[in-house]
Image 1 (cartoon, rainbow, N blue to C red):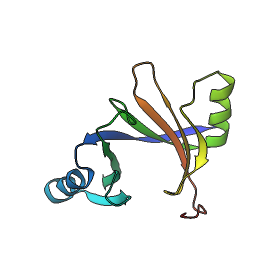
Image 2: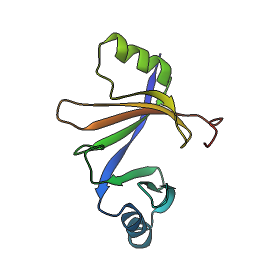
Image 3: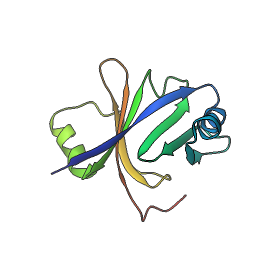
Image 4: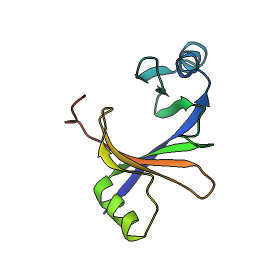
Amino acid sequence: MPRLLYTNPGLRARDVKTLAEWYRDVLGFEIRLLWRDPPTYAMVGRDEIRLAIGPRDDEFGPGTAYIHVRGVDALYAEFLDRKVAIHRPLEVTDYRMKDFDLYDPEGNRLCFGETVESAEKP
């Protein structure tokens, strides 16, 4: 039985790295991830709060949430059984998550993922 654990709201930025640095320098967050060079995605956190930062573009939609799951394979199968339109199929990523995403009827992107400690970086 899949279990939803917590979510990371997604923020949009013209410059992902600059916004991540603002959260670090002004609000005392840690930069936990800068992905790619130049960064196209960042994760900042403080205590148990995590915020994702992505570019302002059509890929991420007007809003996004990364929903951390235990049992992502079962959740993916459940959604397929429910005939949910999947945008990106289930895959193991280079950021060490096994995840997939879909869009809600208003264009918000929902990504469901589970940590994969053994995932190799490409």
